[in-house]
Length: 540
Figure 1 (cartoon, rainbow, N blue to C red):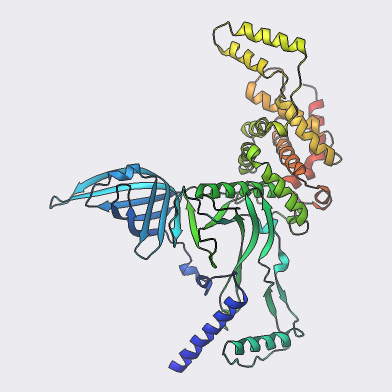
Figure 2: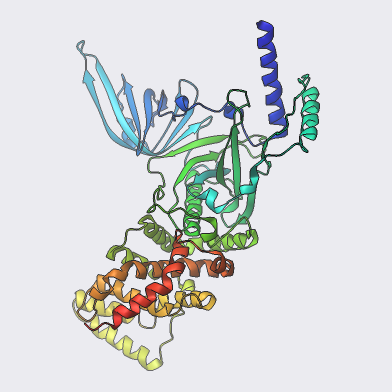
């Protein structure tokens, strides 16, 4: 029996050595064997010692109970110092390092037992908890990279050829058997001869773990496969799991908050590219030394994670419906991503407003069309028409009116008039929307006739919901509010991608579904436009 166990242990050592030597960087020892369903639940409670601002170290328990990250402390000493703590570090009794970032106190107090002994207790919450083999301070530039996965990353990066199955693989088996025996002997293991049957199967992963690498303004962005598998066995067979991740590696180490900002920017781009809000999970940061051979990854747990749209009306997205295809048109995708990130600092507010609209999925109403129109109002000047230069006479009249109005007491009418005069010559919301729509019309006008007119009508609806008035008949347009909203959102994203280098010809020809935001708008545009024109033509 002991000899049998020794041989089994030797076989496991051999397989592990082969795996780690032949597939460097693709897996870690923790991935073998794969966790069972019974033990797959994430750890939520961490008991250990925590450092407070007053220099004391106290025993406590951190809990990851989404959407809250809480810390409970108990001590014989007063715990009032926790009220001043915005960053708390701790170490569990099992050795994990805990970093609680952006903390706030939720209370402190004390109690007495029957022996009149005072027991102190305190509570705190944090917006982020970082768990791993090292601590991280939020203000230190120690993050070498950040990685995460998104809801539809496997849809956008549809790398189907990375994993496959060869059914009739008789021709390939001799070479495979020979390689297996050679590798076994290389590591001092005498393999049992493999008996190849009449219909062998080969399940494979190509080993190309990096799908793409793109240098951008926020660093090197790569999309990678993370495979996990259990050792094959007669009872369990063969099982390989994969998680696709986005890895952002800045040009130099950055702070924790800056790393989260880069992640949010990339998640915003993915949401626009897929056409629905992306959820973000499995966040990790690398805080290892620059010359280290292995990475030092820490798990990041946000109290309010970025949530995506889980069930967008039962829609099943398809890769061909997406405007960008990094698998078949990688150069185009690279160009768009680079240029999109170059403009992110100036357009972040507007793009985040668009992301808020995407989170509403199939829910439409006055608030959404107002928000969709206001995206254009917060675009930077370089994305809108150039301000018109006023004639000398008109500029003089404006200045005289401003001088006269300033003599009056401050009030809503006086201040509103001054504000309107100050905007004289500057592009208004209708002009901004028309300018962005012209970018779309230039490249895709044949598929979207009268787009300028539809966009203008959408802005008028927005103005009605903001300002009201009796000169606009909103009743006949109630059924078209979703369509008008989609028009504004489509113009916003499409013009943004077109300016960044997107060529829409492939998408216009290959898209045939209605699940993606882009594809749906293309599919329904002309028929809904005809209904809209007919509705407006009806007598009141």
